[in-house]
Image (cartoon, rainbow, N blue to C red; front, side, top):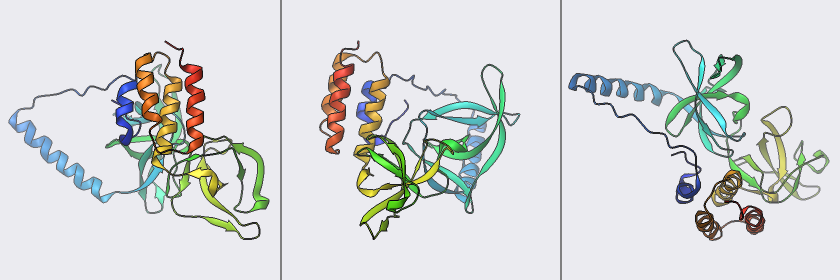
Length: 264
């Protein structure tokens, strides 16, 4: 079954109504079994030579593709906003290619794709949907905050991100405007154009806590789930409120349950 976050698999098993993916079990002859083992070992050897960097999904339900025999990208899986994945790189650059995306209705479109690893599987996805430059990790905005074009007070824009927005934050970099005594963290957001752009947010408005990120992912999933049974909703609610999350998120969840609790 599709995961939200490994650490929160208990809640996921309770409410996620996405279809489970059944793996076909094929019985091989002794000869084919040996061949499969050799092929698998060779594949692992090749894979070990490839370098990866951490990447974060910027767009909710980002589609992942595999190549068919004609070299066209065919839908295979998806990941939710804020999930951690790995991106294959060639030196400093992502492993990428231009390819045709083949839709189920037969329509074809050409895009730029990057090579990623998700849930122990290799896929391709559009480059605008995931981070590819900074070494980032999932994070969440803890309060309504302005977007800054540079790490200084004069870099403020008129645009803001709302509390609870999932982003990708630099893992180590913090830059301080000494004149005003405010620190900023470089982040990547899928907000406005160009998509996947790098901006700055005040460091005190960002949480890199796994619990906070998981909490928001779960709340978002519940909000989108229309047919959740009341008893399951109550179990999720109780579990959510025991998580060590930022205080403002609890208020957010209470409002969310108040507006969705009557759904059947």
